[in-house]
Length: 160
Image (tube, rainbow, N blue to C red; front, side, top):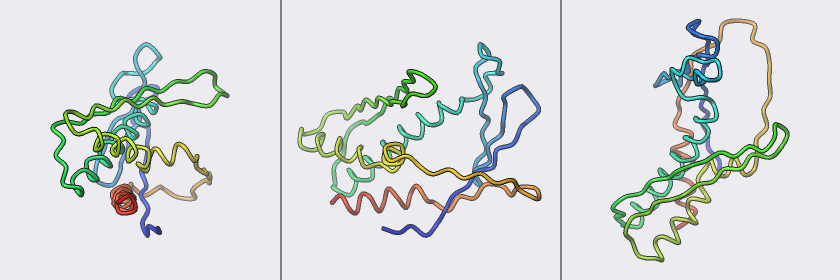
């Protein structure tokens, strides 16, 4: 599977607090901050909240797409993600709990398998390479080319 797109976000300080930043995804903007108890303004989720949200959202989107393709109609689905951190140098652990509503056991089992194939789960499981450079001029805004949607589509196609 080769995906011919990439997404980017632009993150900039707002000047409205010690940690508050504005994230521009190309289509949406959101505020990220830290809780007041930790020196922030509590004006938005913190970066770890966003990772948990990304895993939960990706899991639910992937399961929903797969269920639709199979003609299944689960009455409800939801995901709760908890992030565990033992020490700064230790390996992080995410606990994901699925609520799959009322459905036959074989469909539930298959959706659990599909949850393991969501792109964010795979990214966290495999790890990622991160490179850093310094720009010579102002950075451009975020770009949304649908990378995530293309990945869940491709993964659901492979999982038939």
